[in-house]
Length: 178
Length: 236
Image (cartoon, rainbow over all chains, first blue to last red; front, side, top):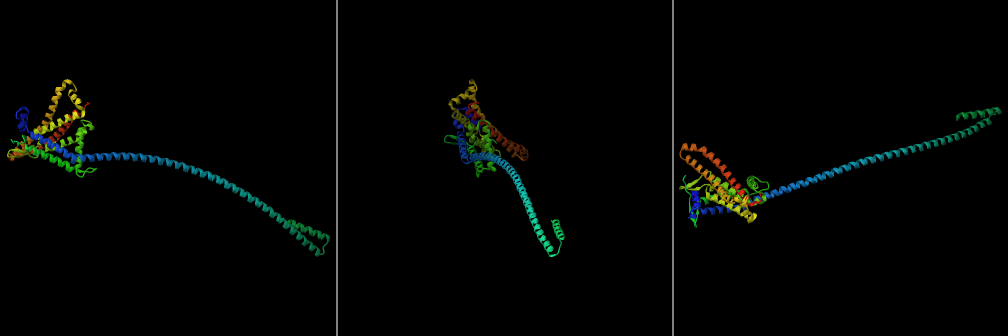
C-alpha cells in the first residue's frame, strides 16, 4: 500500500526515490496546476467577468433608481409649487373680477340714474312746452271763437246788453273749457 | 480485496498509473462541469450557471470568513479549483472500484496518501510563499515568535503538523470509506444472503460517504484558507 511506502519513505533514508511515488507527486502537481490554469481561462474567468458585470449593472441600476427618485421628488415639489402659485393667481383673478364687477355695477347704476334724471327733466320740459302750446292753442281758439261770437253778434240785431251777456257767456264757456 | 497498486518506473521516478489515470479523470470531469456550465452565460443566470455561481459565492464565503476580501481575493481561484477537484475526486471512488488482475485501477485519487499529501504540501508551501511575498521576510519570520518567543519551536512543529494533518485527514476519511465499501461489496458478492444483507449497509454507507466526501472537500479548503490567513495577515 502506498501508506506503507509513505511511512517507509519518511523513516528510511536509503532508496527514498524508489519507495516514494515521486512520479505521482509531480503528476498531481502537474494535473492540478493544469486544471487550475484551464479553468481560469475557460470557466472561472468568464464566470467572474459576468458576475462582476452583473454587480456593476445592479450598482448602476440602483444609482439610476436613486437619481430618478430624487428627480421625481424634485418634479413633485415643482408641481406642488406651481399648483400653489396657480391657485393664488386664480384667487387673485377672481378677486380682481369681483372688484371690477362691483365697480362696473356702480358705474352702470350711476349712468342709469343720470339717464333717468335726464329723461325726467326732458319729460318735464316737454310737458311744460306742451302745456304752453296748449294754452297758446286755447287762446287762439278763444280769439277765433270771440271773433265768431262777434260775427254772430254783428250779424244779428242784438242789444248792448245781449251783446255783452253773449261775450261774457262765451268767455265763461271758454274759461270752463280750459 | 487485497488489491495492489500498479507501478511503473520512468526516468527514475516511480509512477502509479492508477493515480495518473484517476487524476486525469478527475481533472477532466471538473473541467467539463465547469466548462459546460459556463457556456452561454447570461446576466440573468439560468441552470448550471446558477450552480457555478453558487459554488463561487460559497468559496468566497469560506475565504471571507478567514480574511478580508482584498487580501483573500487572489486565493479565490485556488480555493475554487481545490474544492471542486477534491469533491469530484472523493466522489469518484463511491459508485465502484475497478480492479483488473488484482491491480486496483479505479478508485478515488484522494484515497492515496501521496496525492493528498502533495496537495497539502502544495497548499502549505503556498502559504509560506504568500506569507513572505505579502508581509515581507521580516514579518514572516517574526510571525514564528508570536504570540510569545518561547513558543517558536511549537510554531515550527505546527507547520509540519498542519501539513501532515491536512493531507492525512483527507486521505484517511476517503480511504476508510473505500475500504468499507469494498468490504460491503465483497459481502454482497459472497452469495444471495450476503447480497441481501449488504444492500442496506452499503446504501447507507455510500450515502454517508457522499456526505463525508463533501465535508472533507469543504474542510480541506477551509483549513487551507485558515493557514493562509495566518500567514498573510500581520495584525490579529
